[in-house]
Image 1 (cartoon, rainbow, N blue to C red):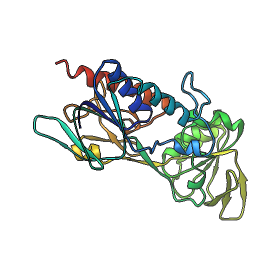
Image 2 (cartoon, rainbow, N blue to C red; image 1 turned 30 degrees about the vertical axis):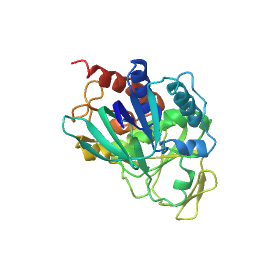
Image 3 (tube, rainbow, N blue to C red; image 1 turned 60 degrees about the vertical axis):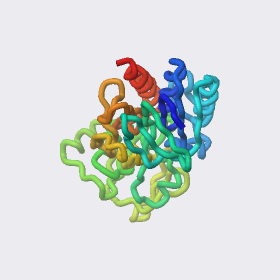
Image 4 (tube, rainbow, N blue to C red; image 1 turned 45 degrees about the horizontal axis):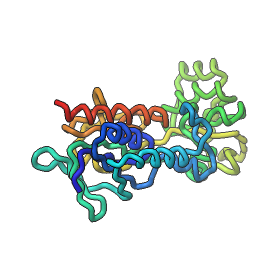
Length: 297
């Protein structure tokens, strides 16, 4: 299959990038494995927040609408599956496989997203996206000013614990992962955040933190700091340069979402140290613009 542009990843960033190319009347293929990062929010029956005009909608519904709108453009093709075996072919075209389908593209946009790796606290993973979160701006408001717990997995917990008092009374559970110094303890106290040094045994109920000494602290919701890993090997297969972010590696981009590999662009959570639906959509717009404009010179 030969196309002008291929977009790997059909979530918020990928759909946004492909839309710009479709509107430029270019032939574009979108490849999607159906593993959207925030799918756990849908599984829990919760909604997406902070994206203008879409606040309070289910992420799956937003993506479904975006896909339907994109596929109205006759130059767009969609392929369900996982991209792999990527390489730079003679002449600079980008080649990869989706199952038994070989794809050759003049320009490639990576919107592959990341995979969250949660700290090994019993009960935490089962509540991910339901009552355990990582983004206060996405989910803090819905906790209605209740008790909020921060389960530390790294020094980033300090940042979480300093932010979250605006959304509710906050307790930082150190859990042996982080030891604040005197200045950090002072900053937490100034924000009204409580520090709990007793290790966490497990998470029960909706968001109840059970400590090893038997105490149970009932929380309206919990936040933690997952490590992230790229959800697809394609960027590494092509040799894209990486950045080391506070939560994990991401694809290095410059200007209009250009990677270090000619004719390869990246957007969304795979190409920034932090992300949200709104940021992913904006990144996708810039990647679509960048990929299209790169054909003019």
